Length: 288
Ligand code: NAP
Image 1 (cartoon, helix red, strand yellow):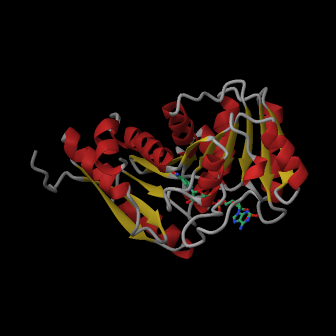
Image 2: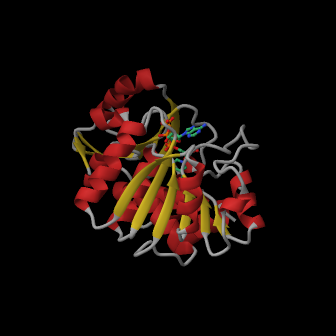
């Protein structure tokens, strides 16, 4: 099928910094083309202090919508006219849709992660989860897992920037869902060991191990793991982190962040176009 930009083409894109490495333009443009949709997706390198002006400009240009990545996800909450329930609870926006000049902020990270778990045949319902990190992505995962029926979630974070937010997050989950959530210091090795021992799923949602820091792992030793544990790292660069290798060494089933990336994008695509992304085609083209 031929693909050309017309006078009617709707613009979508990605705001953040850096963005040039992103796979999102490939997967969205390929999907628009495959479905014959008159849309295009571009990347814009926007620093946090430029976000407000960029969002105003995109609104004026009547774009269909855009994604935001680090460091813009939290700030975008203040700039959206409305927030989806998930974006409000999470306190971060990764997808914006423009409907007649009204910008609604969504967060598709949690849905994307849960969908990526389904790929491995794992459902969070009634499961015990140890989650490392309490930033934007971890919060989205935590909220969605609690809403989807996880029995317990132990959040481990360093005693720093996100600590108060993490405390509010676990309090809110305990107040609003049947899931039992608890916060621990990532440095508390004995609690970490015992939480992992009792868990079905261990998820790294910190950037520890992400390029260029490939030699780092969020856990002190592979001895913390057991072979019936499903271990996931939401990092996808590198495809296999040290944490993943430690888990494989212990005989754990593992998966990286690529399918989370795919499914959070698929949900954004659905929000903008009302259509399902051609998942199989995108997997075969960019994720195999
Ligand atoms: P974020 O909001 O900045 O949160 C990062 C979290 O990790 C915070 O809890 C932070 O704690 C903690 N952390 C950072 N560096 C640490 C260190 N050296 N030691 C201990 N804890 C540390 O970032 P995010 O948006 O959640 O992203 C986190 C990771 O997920 C990134 O690698 C990102 O690329 C990846 N991600 C993947 C997908 C996907 O689709 N696969 C989607 C979103 C994000 P403090 O607050 O105390 O610093």
